[in-house]
Image: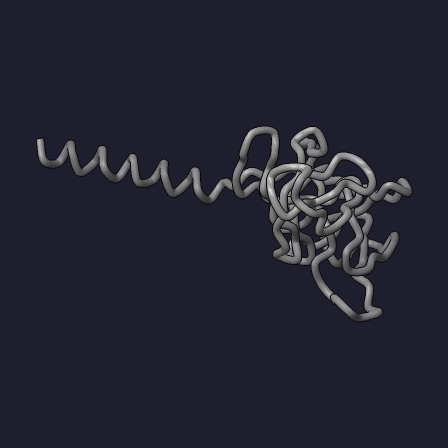
Length: 152
């Protein structure tokens, strides 16, 4: 009986840890979406976000969602301005004029098909062995090392 309780406890603990690790991610849906200081229009806007920016869901209140972005900034967005289409953003080289490579395949041996600066947003098409196949709004499609990106 004691063994069974211990096994059930470990199972419950594993599920709890798994749920916390699997934080919900969404993307901004629309241009110039206001991120507010609180859950409502009476709260002042803090930033304007562009379409596709990936965000992590922290909590929900009514129709409002508290989010965190790739720079660790938080705020509230009305839920109609969020979508589940996966996106990623370049998280490296902030404040530098250095670009990352976008390649024709998932590895450094593949040709470079483009480059991107810090903060550039891509739609996520696929992930494979530490690489992400992405598509920019310009139509450019290619692979970027996953560790250079934030999102899902």
